[in-house]
Figure 1 (cartoon, rainbow, N blue to C red):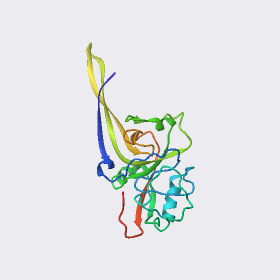
Figure 2: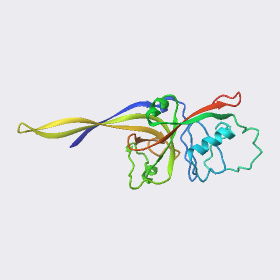
Figure 3: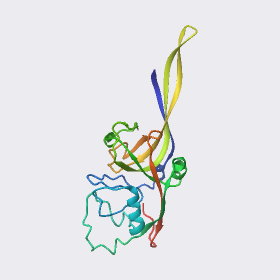
Figure 4: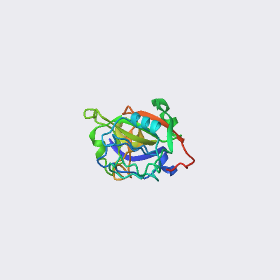
Length: 222
C-alpha cells in the first residue's frame, strides 16, 4: 500500500474570524488560558479543573486583558494598589456541559473549552501539524484543558495493488480522519502557530459552553 496524497478539508475554523487573542506561553505556570477570557485566582500556579476556573469567574468576575495583561508569571496577589482599575467588568452568565452530539453545533456559535486526558507526547508537538492520536497505554491520569476552535477531516489517498483476472491492477481509495482544531497555552511553537489537530474519534472530551455577561458599560475586548 502506498500513500499517494493528502487533502485537508477544514469545515470550520474560528482562527479565520479574527477574534482570538494572541497565543500565550504559560511557562511553568499550571494555568488555563480560556481563549477569550482571562482569570486570576490563588491556585494559579498549581492547576485545577476547568469547572473551578469557571466558578471563579462566575462568582468573582474578570477584567479585560487590555487592563490586566498576561505576564506569564505569578504576580503579587495582595497588591491592592490597582484594585479600582481591575474591578470586575464581566462575569459568566451561565456555563454548561455540552454532550458529544452537540459539540459541532455549539462550536459554530462560539469557541469552546474542552478537557481530555492525553499522553505526554502532546506537549512535544513542536511545529507538528499531524493529527494527534493518544497512546492509550501512556495516557496520564491528569487531564489538560484546551480551547476548541474548529474541526475538519484529513483525506488520505491510498493506492494498493490487487490481482484481477490474473493481472495486477492499481486501486485507489480514500481514508477520512476527522479531527478537532485546538489551542493550548504552550506558545506559538507548539503545533502550528500554537494550534494543533487531535483525532476526533479517539478521545473522550468534556466540553463547556460559556456565555459572558457585561458588568459595566465597557466594550468586550478580544
